Length: 238
Ligand code: 6PG
Image 1 (tube, rainbow, N blue to C red):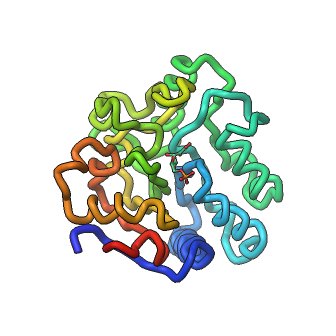
Image 2 (spheres, rainbow, N blue to C red):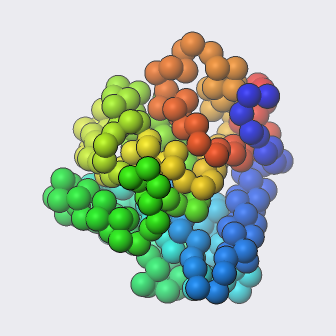
């Protein structure tokens, strides 16, 4: 296989494997350091967040985990569309993660100003390599059009951007987005792409076979240290 796949029975066991990975990374962190994780939104990580809230209160050393975001919709945190809001409702309201370890993208601010503030924040809080911040773990999802983070097939320039964080527009809804760029994502020590459900099976097959069609998919340009955590349904055409 071309890509690194970890295949699990269903969405729940896929989420569990990612929770265990976070636990392991927190265990392997020295007392003075943190595991810096960038979270995605969308529906796929919701079961992970619910699992973390229900079963990982004491299993993970949360004081060693710092949370950042891969992307955010430019709406208030209380809006149903907010990625932070979804994470708060499913997980963060249980308050295991100390407030000072949570670094949300502020979707309610003027996007260009917020992108700059977040770039500076990443510069201050994270180590850097090649001029881009280094996350320990970036958790990604993939849309059925091959998008990842808020980098869409209509504009691949955000893969190789001079900026670590950029403003983009969702081409379908025209909603403004804040997103980590491809260079920042690829700079991470570890990237985990969570994909579940039959709806993405064909796309995953194309990506795995390096099909010419995939040149237009942002996901095809995520080429750092990437592991695909997928369920059997998503892997059904591999
Ligand atoms: C977002 C995302 C986005 C997401 C994919 C997959 O804010 O929408 O971070 O990149 O990961 O669209 O979304 P689903 O998990 O809902 O299929």
